[in-house]
Length: 526
Image (cartoon, rainbow, N blue to C red; front, top):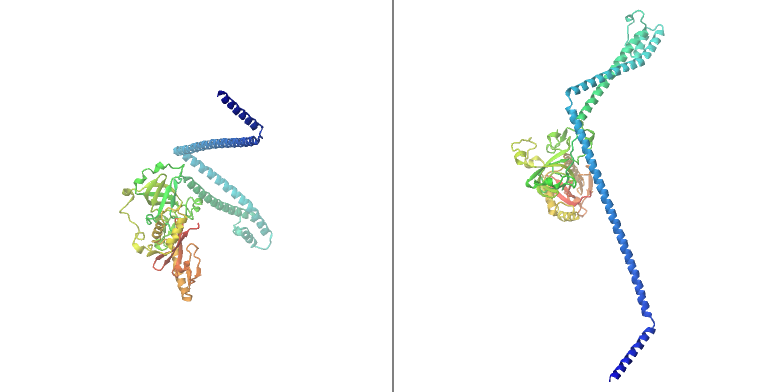
């Protein structure tokens, strides 16, 4: 039994050996495929290794660039600190020099002034003498030549008088000459006297000019500059001067905010301001058209002392007796309501300030000291309801305004101070509830109504309107075409005006009886 099993095992082993031999002698096609795959995998691995190496090099390069940039920034900050230290040192030295000048003894200053006066007198005397000599040297030869020509002419007793008249010397009588004194000598003395008088007159005029220049120089030396850098810029809903209220708190829906820039006044300076209901804003009238002229006239000698007052229908008053923005020093003062304080921003309402105004300072409003119940004002300033000529009878909106305002607000909602177009409509209504037109625009409106009445009597199908920003040019447009145009929306004979609020251009018309109709609203082009 064991033998048969052993034989079977041998038979199985022999069959397995034969199968192994067959496998050994088979073609090796499958092994070549595996080798190709292995080579491809090795190629992929090498590619990945090269990519990893490239990424490592890029990371290293970026690290070096950031390190170089950081070193450059540190170096620039160090240089800036050095410049600030140098500037502080120079300012300190200048202040010390000014203090030393102020602390100098009065006797020394008086002695210096006396020395300067004596030196100036000596220079003036020498200048007078040299000018007189020069004038004499120029005039005497001409007088002598005229005298010789008069003496050589025979039988002409009037020639000396003619010669003296030509030379500019007054006529002298013949009997007035002493013995031994010829006509040439007499003319010589007269010309010398005239020369001295002319020289003295010229020197007097020159001395007067020098005194005026010295006075201007002394006045300019007394002018002092002060470090007044704005603490921030106010962002307001009033995009332009036109439409900005003439006084604060007249438009409660007006919104603005002041942001302290980074690197300037720290936001900690605003801590505690939220405890006040109102604050004062001290700012610069940066949008004035005459602000550049103030640089060339620091003494304000050419400043227009009187301005037109809207409430006086064009009547003029002294600039310092009004609230006009055109002042010798263009600094404005307004009160605003403090809504909230968030970080570097102060949110305000009711401010009558144009967008982009540089703010110099903020001060809290104190009712017990800032409010003066017994204060008096002129009669033309006192509020008298509709009788002051500034209130409008009504403000209405065209039915399409809501849709137009919705589209305009959506187009620039990311820049708007308001969260809903209805708030903008309320702002427009409050702004136009008072007459924001200038005196010249009101007069132009009156002329327009008279002109349109004349046109209506000739051709009723024509309507005329004037763009308030187009320098008063007349634009005649034909109506009655069936289109819902701007001319058809306006009442015949109305004058068209524009006001830009929060970047949206509102077109409105003012009809008889001071009735305002807002016709269109779209995003302002500028």
